[in-house]
Length: 133
Image 1: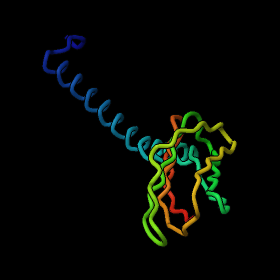
Image 2: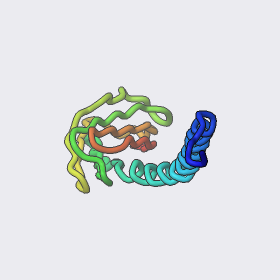
Image 3: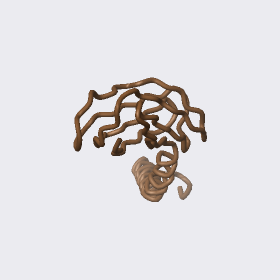
C-alpha cells in the first residue's frame, strides 16, 4: 500500500518539478543576460576603423586606420557645414587589412568644410566622425 503512488500524487510531483526547472532556468537567464551584453559590447566596439585628413594644394589624402575592421570597406563623406560645400563622396570602395592603414586621395582644393565621415567594412564595425578639410 505504501509504495503505490496515486495519479494525483504523480501529477503534483511532475508539476512541482516543472515549476522548479522553470524557476532555475529564469534565474540562470537573469544572471547570464547582463554578462552576455557586457561581453558582446566589448567585442563590437573593438572592430572599427577611423580616418584623418592630410591636405595639400592639389587635394586631400584620407588615411584610414584599422582597429579591428578589415576586408572590403566603403568610405562616405557628406559636407555638413563651414566653408564651401563641395560634392559628397558616397560609398567609395577600398580594401583595409586588419591593424593596417589605407589611403584614399581626393583631388580638389581644401575648403575648410566639416564632413560627416562614415566607414563601413565587411568585417568590423561602423565608424562615424566629423572631419574638417
